[in-house]
Length: 320
Image (spheres, rainbow, N blue to C red):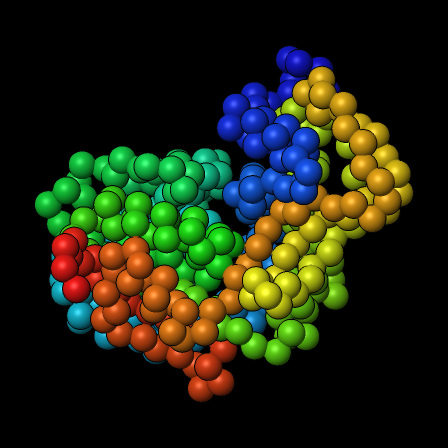
């Protein structure tokens, strides 16, 4: 692809990729998996039989969004962090009937298409999409300013972050939403390793395609020549860290160039692309408390596979 037809690369994407590939332990932040194609593949993943998270969380939302709406009260704006196709959001919107919905997503084209589809389903709902990386400070639309606020962070996306980053993010969400705001968050539980591994390495290979799409994106946007067919997707359980890890493993010795920089990888070496941390009940509550959120209500499925937690942003306390 020549310079005239190659998409303009996000400088943060370029920096993260070049730094990550040059690091002693190669890694690229998971947020870069979500270009348009990656977002489409992730939506396909959520419908796979192995991916229990979406089915369980959807049932919890259907059962308990009415209670969420009663607790939060009428007139609250719903702000969703990492909205994707906003599939599960529809359940919350029908229950809460908010006047305003603010979807935030890093994939701008995908975000706009999803917002258009949602506007057709909810003609009386004001929708203000924000194209942004929710890991960075976000300026919310001015219409949010004088309303109650309900943050929505489903899908156990919080599990993609190490604990310190998760706390930083939850604190940033609190700062964006303000004291007294609520946050409805999905958190995946620790469970049988085989169940966890299959959820991130499905038989149809959709998760593999999602992971490998990162290499296609690097080639397309950063003038790279990575031999994608030399890599395979790997999902492994890291018990000490209580997380599933996704890696791209080189199946043979390779050399390639990214944005003019040369790299080599030996067979068996990997690029670490994503974590999915799993939490016990007390772990999730501690994470929220450390970030300034107080537990309001928690719901789980009968098998305790997944938790839906409603929290409230608390004022800063200067004494125990």
